[in-house]
Length: 166
Image (tube, rainbow, N blue to C red; front, side, top):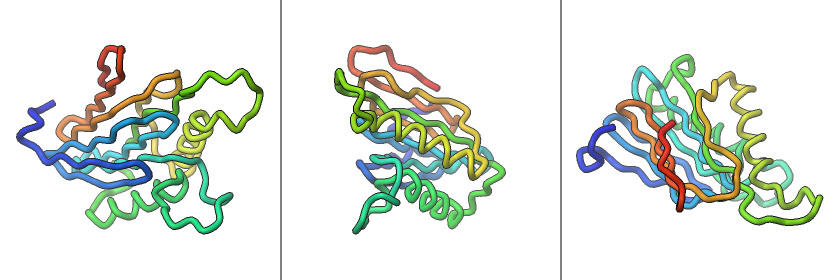
């Protein structure tokens, strides 16, 4: 990784997505049950990140924010990256998040949003033939993530946990 003072830093909010060119870093804060999906063109060194809140837009009426859902966020992020010259054959993916933040003693599937988000992101990426080469998902803690275009490193920070690079 290079010094973050020498690069463009792009912040992605909740239910948002964006891209960054090299040299750059793209980050999102406070992933709980949400999943950060990073798409990275290994040749052009362009990265895109989506902060996905929910698995599917199909069950929601009056959906005004396409970035909120795995299906529409990943599709729109791909289009944005293609407009910048990205080539799908050069893409890889890394994902993080999808935690079970609260310990519910219940078989009710309503509380497993994190697991559903992970599953939806994996299914969508498999459908469009983009390989997930690394992930840090599940568990019961939040994450803040940073992706660096220079070397494709994905830094995972969590309170009380050692920093990881995947």
